[in-house]
Amino acid sequence: MPPFGRPPMGPGHGPHPGGGEYEDFNLEQMEKETEEMLKLRYLDKDNAVFERTKGGFVSVRIGDEFYPRVQVIRMFPFSDPDKYISIRTPDEHSKEIGVIEDMKNVSKETAQMLTEQLNLRYFTPIITKIINIKDEYGYAYFDVVTDRGACRFTINMGGHAVVHLSETRILISDIDENRFEIPDITKLSARELKKLDLFL
Image 1 (cartoon, rainbow, N blue to C red):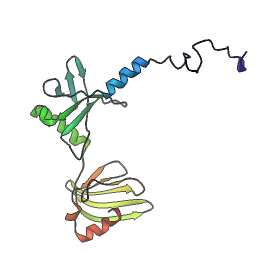
Image 2 (cartoon, rainbow, N blue to C red):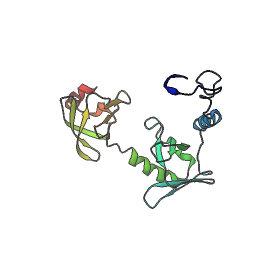
Image 3 (spheres, helix red, strand yellow):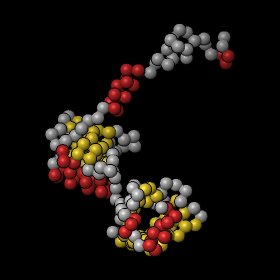
Image 4 (tube, rainbow, N blue to C red):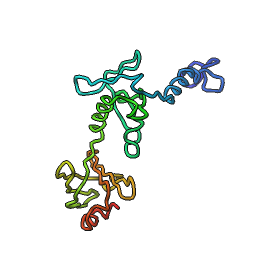
């Protein structure tokens, strides 16, 4: 009798090569799921119908498939904002339904509807003026003017809050995950640049 009174393992039940314990998972199913994940389905005006829902969201019908609500996500939000738009289920373990290769491949109405959803997701005020930046205890406190009005926010100095999208373009994320953009730092005054110097 093996330790702890466990019955001996018969053929096909051990963790050894050729045993069945590790073969119980469905290899065929796993391969099928992997294939589905790697398969890219392109959506356009001929195979997908997008509509606004009463709640202000977006639904899509693709043949016999219907998704009452979808997420709209840019795969390349900065380099190609109007191309490769991923349409996903809205749940926690979001699944990709398909990809719009180019917004030109859908109707004007659909493109406008999807752009509205993208603007909500990627709301990024443009910083037009830096009034002050104060840093203490690992945080930086920004007092700025944006294209949406005056704003104050805080960033974590220890994280990756400031990202250089190019030599002159900066994206800043605050502690609440709000995003702010400086499209061209060369357009800032010398005084503003000095305040921003710590992040350049």
